[in-house]
Image: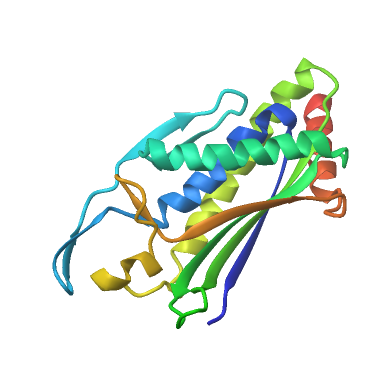
Length: 218
């Protein structure tokens, strides 16, 4: 199986890291989650509904839609908070990458553990910029909102392609494809990881600074 890989790049100021990452990760998970499966008998099931919720950002002119699941939001928010703390403590000019990997399990014979096979990975490269004054922050607030809107459209376009998804499992195999630990939603199995690095390059931050400078010149 070939694993699809998608890369997004964003440039934000430090107070925008949480909201930008939550907006992108939740957008992806909204399209990679189903309602809970209710099995009647092996091979026959119904799927519950997935509620949605609008979220308005405080430091970005942007709103996004997420799955209406407090449990899922807590998991994602915790991972994003850890990523932001690592960025702030890194001393690497605030550059890093957070990844959302979807995978399925392949059962192995005892005594070996199950094999986790990734089928889609989203990597978000982040560069934290320092701004000089409130005027620049206001412009950044608007520009980041515009960029996030473009990224969300890009995510939806990618997800709407007719590409590989794990086949709907039988009741005995549902845990090999979906995370069934949440009571109100069932995302595909996923894991979030991050790394902090100083070798991502500065092209994104340079573009953001140029956008701010050009706007100030108008």
